[in-house]
Length: 207
Image (cartoon, rainbow, N blue to C red):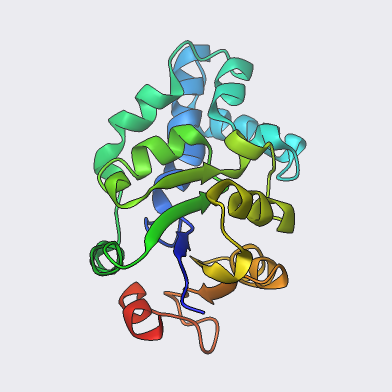
C-alpha cells in the first residue's frame, strides 16, 4: 500500500541537535548566572544538577516554561529561542527532501520537543507540514511510545500502515513505530547503524 502520510522527527533529523543543546547547556546557565550573580561555570554546574535531579523520564525536563519559572528567569523562553535563530541549522538534504515529497504525500511532524522549540525550529519550513505534533505539549508524554503514534494516526484519520516515519533515534523513531505497524526509516548521519539513511534525499527513491 502506498503511504499517505510521511512523518518526520525534528532534532537530529531535520535540524541539527546543537541548537537544543546550546539552549539547555549554554544559554539557560548564562541567564541563571546573570540573574543570580554567579560565575558561569558555577551556574552551569547548578543547572545541570537540577536537570539530572528531575530526570529525562519526567515531563518537566522537556518544558522551557518549567525551568524558567524554577530558575526565576523573568524572560519568555520563546523569545530567547527566537533570538537564537541564527544558531539553527536546517539540514540541506532535509529541505531538498521536503521539497521533493511535499507534492506527493501529506507531511507531518512527530517530535518530543516542546511547542516552543518546534515553533522556532520549524519556522522556515512549517509550510511543508499539514500537522505538527509535540509529544510533551500535545500528548503529555515524554517519549514517542506506541500510544503516541496511535494517537497521531487517529488524529490524522489514517491507519498505521498508511504512515511512514523517519527519525534519528533507533528505539523511538524506528523500533516503536514499527511495533504498531508504521513503516519506519532510521536516519543516521554518523554511520553508526548499517542500513540506515545517511541522507534524507534517499527517501524519494525508497518511497
